[in-house]
Image (cartoon, rainbow, N blue to C red; front, side):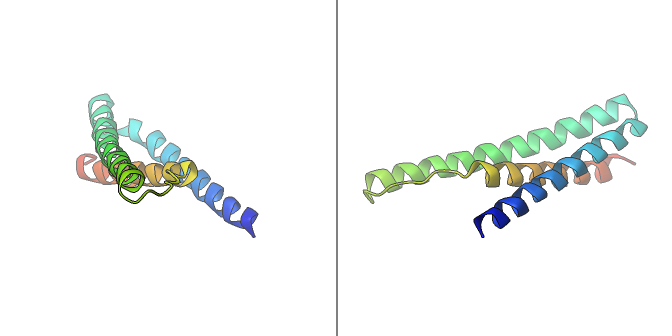
Length: 101
C-alpha cells in the first residue's frame, strides 16, 4: 500500500514537471522581454511562498521542541517538491495569461 502512495506522488511530480516544461517551451512565441518578465514574476512569487512556508515550519519546530517537549518530524521533501512545482506552474500560467497578450 505504501508503494502506491509513492507512485501517485511521483506521478503527480512527473506530470507537474512535464506541464512546466511545456509551458516554458511555449513562452518563446512572446518575445524575449516578455518571456523573461513572465518567468521572473512566476519565480519571485513562488520563492516568496516557499520562504513563507519554510519560516512557518521553522517556528512550528521551535514551538514543538521548546514548549511541547515533542519530536518534530520535519518537512516531507517529496510533498514539498510537488507543492512547489504546482505553485510554480500555476503562477507561470497565471502570469502568462496576464502578460502574454
